[in-house]
Image (cartoon, rainbow, N blue to C red):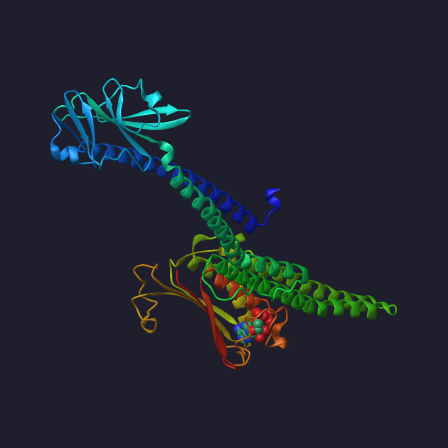
Length: 487
Ligand code: ADP
């Protein structure tokens, strides 16, 4: 049941429940504190009233003529003299009753609403006692009179605790009206704020749903300006959509490029087969046809292999491990093998600085160098040269002054440059920005076994090693490709 509720509803419900609990608790705390305070005030008033009345009682041995003519104060015969009770004596004020009693409990003057019940209650000087009559609690305060002639007399003050009920019920009524109103206000405010705050989440969900339904990766979440968590979440989602869109487009482009490139050899094979099967052929003609088909088949399988290698490196570079290895030795060994080709009477020379080590992948580095040297052979001039050069340029030595004959002290802080130079046909200036793109071939007349993936792969391998590949070329004079690594 709870799972079906929206986040907004859950937050509001939780918030309301806690708020109601807090308000109820506060209500009871307020009532209890008020009750205690009021009761204390009642007791304090009782004590003050009784204490004030103490001075209003005096004893006279005989009645003077002044006193006899005074009809304001009250006189009463007591022992061998008189007791004078001043008119300021408050026998009942604010529901506090004060009475003058003898120590045996006989009431001489004043008021006592529960005289029967207090008859058996011992006098306790300056102490507040409690007595319950018919379920009502009364406070009783006794004060012994100490003036001369009054030693046997007590003042007894009595007040009921219900006296504070009026104030208490007023506080309770105000709380009962105000607090639910405040709770209602808080819940409504909370609900509105939750709705406003969570609105972007609804928009995020709507956009994600519409992308899923319409496959429109170009759509973005628009929730306006802001820097809170939800705006950052929306930003992350938008970045993710952009990346998804990019890789989706790259994949589509790759599929379309690959199918386009494969179409040519497939068409050649089909055409060759149709032509050969049109009429009976001589064994030589069959052999020729099969050779064409075989060549195209090999071209396709090479292309598929290269495409797979390229895609694997582009999409899953983590599949290729890295290790520390001696690049100098690797370059020398690749050059040694490639020098055996001796295509078009091109001479390959290799200049490598010793002990240059890198952290990378041997297989990929071999592939990079093989691709560059193959291209140099393919686009080289007959009888020309290919120069492979591996150098380390330490940080402290400017690149131009670097002298390959003096080995650097440490081969850790500096730049490694691996270059392949030829004096072949070179590359036209307008082709230079494109030659590293997949399937781009500037000079198809020479590409032969190529498929336009070689330099794209070289670029990926350079990036895999945290380096970059650069090219300088002059048409008719030659090209120099350089891999720059900063270990
Ligand atoms: P391809 O299989 O066509 O050689 P690459 O990706 O290796 O594909 O190279 C892309 C294009 O760059 C080639 O078609 C070629 O025109 C040009 N190119 C590459 N290397 C050289 C080079 N050493 N000299 C001249 N042109 C080159």
